[in-house]
Length: 313
Image (tube, rainbow, N blue to C red; front, side, top):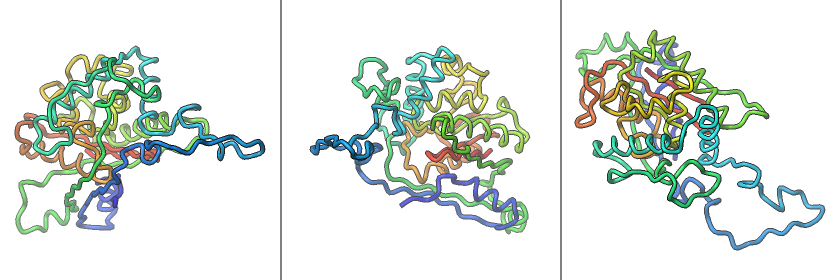
């Protein structure tokens, strides 16, 4: 059971267009129990034998031989591409996961029950997933989140203004065109870059005016690369950004103070709405031990495997 992953942006755009005055935004996820790899992760006893004249795709699969289409491998590829171009190390990817596991220890509801430190080199891994270790991947599972959006006109008509109300200054939904020669990892990057530009321009904000960010860290490689895609750092400077401590809760620009998908968990259908809830909780000053002091402007982003990307600030 799954609601749409764009979360708030689609509903916010409907309100801006005058199609609705009040919207209840609900994200829910009831996952199967086979894990992220699904049936592909199960042991197989049937040996496939090639028969001359039989179409190759029926006789032999190419997964893991000619690249990979699995999400851990796709984002490992994105991380390796970025590392090759900008000199990022495996340790810097691991710092992203360590930060998020540290943050989630301050949150009552989380998927990873204790503070952990991912190991970068000493864990046996599938070669398709390098540089990603187990604790640098998000755990999927069940979950739900909800929020209410109203138009300005409706808000003014309410008999009693709620202190919980916060303004949505910009909401953008983008989709990267499907190119036969472009990898899935490159498609995610392109969509995030387009979304970042549109979202910040629409909201009349600059990255240096943000107080916190909840971004789509399905893997540690994804978060580090998105620092650059969203221009939270200088172009090519995502490695230096994580080394500086800037994205930690007490840093210059806290990122994924909730623990992110890596540690809070990734109930896929609920993830987009949960990011908006987390940002709003900080803007209301109700985040408890993980509260970002003085938070007034936040950014929440989400993405999906079919390359759409959503941005709300």
